[in-house]
Length: 494
Image (cartoon, rainbow, N blue to C red; front, top):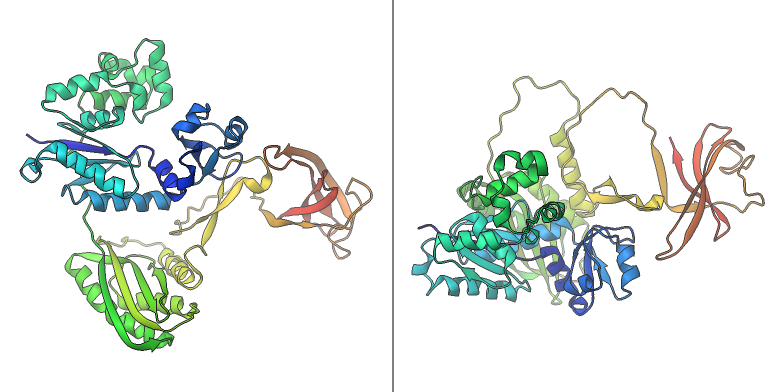
């Protein structure tokens, strides 16, 4: 009989945050979507919950409840890297692993036939927990006969669980509290009003009206709890990076000769990737220096490829920016592969002078020369002060254009960071003021004031914003800081 196991790493982002800051383990700690007072709390540890700090609250509200509260962001790339590392560890225990696409930190493993490899499934589950504990992560393992049964048991329990029969698993599923599952918390509150707090009472409801009465997510949970809707285990590809190293007879500092060494190392890496029907997605190389130090760099082509020329071009750009304080005595290259996907171009390509592929190649060269964080795009964020309502996120791939005829011409607002201090002025109103100098003329039109007050949780701010038009036609966005008694240029509308 097939056996399925679920590994649940509770609140993986919170565990990553506490692993990076071990001194926070004895204090209330939370993970926020952004490290600002108006950031939303996503995960909270037990000490924070004891202070009545829960997910969904603002970070500022949590600070008002506990002065010892510690919080920080955990980037999505960090979570993905940790999930990949966990998958590599779990491959030691099962050849078939499927990470959950819905919840970070949840993995399903195929446990069939492992009783002939390990003394018992209990020892197998304990070995998984011990191995993850060495990586600084705490997990609960449940071994059952179905995906949802093992998932529900892992989410509801605090200790490892191995079911002996399918009936035992189904009985346990009926006792699981709905609030312990990673579904909408509002669903648990709604069902609690009907006197239903466990999956057993929820399963007994007629399936016909679940979606209509409680929503699509409740219908999905009801279908999964009844044993429907699960596809076969879709294990992730087991791709191990390929490495090649070369020691140098003498310390080397010349960029051209170091590039030649990388070219020699790259050839066997590409051949091995081609043998595995993969393409190079990223190349990491480490330079061991003569003084005992090292320098680690990474380049990524615009698209996975097996061509050496574009990869070496990116390597050359990266090497030319390095300022090594000693000669290189060893070069280690590691290639990460990606699946090989055949591509069929469109039969009738649109005539366009712009190419997404060319833009991606140009951005890859900029990242190779200036660093992986050089290419960013603005993302809107919820915030109180104007400068907190956006942030710069890394841009991996340019999006294809989707032209549309705008009904209203867009207005672009350029924001200066930090704001530009303006000369002092006696009167509070900016009318008639040479705010942009003599060349642009005096202010002829004023829209405002728009009052913005806040920041009491860190540094209180009281501002009066104005849109002013100069005689030259420029629209400037300025504000008067009441606490500092100064005028500042925040931006310009174009």
